[in-house]
Length: 495
Ligand code: ADP
Image 1: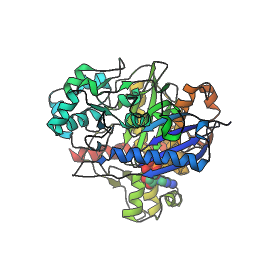
Image 2: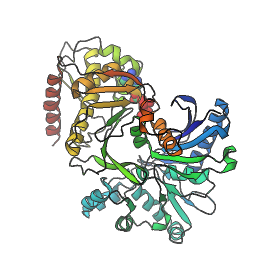
Image 3: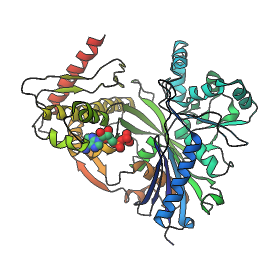
Image 4: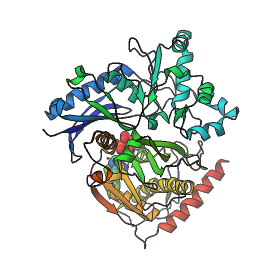
């Protein structure tokens, strides 16, 4: 009987289930969206029960659509939106509050207080993170403090906490397993990434009782079996990883210096730094990539808030394209940017500038400026922001890389990928599969179960779609010079 891996991809807007075969090909996908709640300005919530129900529907659907026997599923891998926080009653399985989503800013003022109390250095040293409402720690505290009974029940050991991986595993095993992996634990602000343990000093700062925390298991290991009644087979859960780390593994960035960049709404850039956690001097995040056979691999992470979103802006606000895919042709109507630089600070500028008040700016417009120049400068700006991050990462990690692996919706744009290669003077490689996140956790599960033997086995399964090599003769230096001068000017005008 042919065997398969089931990847559960629990995203921010939808629950997905994907079946991979031994050649790492997608056999079938099922997907259900779930509700997004915005109860107040800056608040974002999900209904954890709806996440579980849609996930279960997606799992059942993908099995029936693919017509495979559940007994032919070798193992399950789970990847998830990170940081999103659920607290539930361990006796009846009911969440005590909606899941607070990673985007939620309600705890920003508590974060400011921690910074005023000079906790930044201590927290960065232990967790690799900056103090921000983005991570789980302050969200847990907020739920526990929202009602006196909730805090009391937690102190009595009646409640448990989990990120979405933990919540789904708890439901898939009918409450038998309360576990997570280090890639997820390392996003909570409660986990000491140096010693690979929950940290009492951090628990005290965030006022979180230790007994609500999950056990932290390897990212690639048989750590639980789903209940027989879920889909009629007791399948092992053998892979767990947060979405960005899973994508790093799915791109087979398994050696120090390997980098992947996802070009979606924003860009998520993440570099494998091997066995050592690197303390960033540029406010990049240092995080755990995965733990395999008890051994940690670390990563540096940096993001660009506005990437594909800039193309949406060209489409929806400027109206110079009707569909995102048209931007490539429009940019190809001109030979170069015509002296135009687009600073894509549509929601401030993150690393390495960290100016939340910066605004988007187009420099260098003349009477000769055409839509094509604007489109080209917009694509260049996505590549330039990625370059900004990668250069700082390389300085932090003291590693120079040779290949940038890419994925995400905007990576389909060949011109953007060529520009990226030229500006970085490095090869940019795009794989055939676009499902790198799900594939990554399928790889983690399949390695643990013996479905795939080792990483070199996987190398044959990672298939290149297209590689872009740097063009030495073009005007990249000039583009970079103008960018550096103009971004400095913008930041100076803001002072
Ligand atoms: P997300 O997962 O963040 O929703 P996706 O990976 O699905 O994002 O990518 C969608 C984004 O990619 C959109 O912001 C869209 O504007 C952009 N995009 C899609 N196709 C292209 C293209 N050919 N060129 C440039 N940007 C594109």
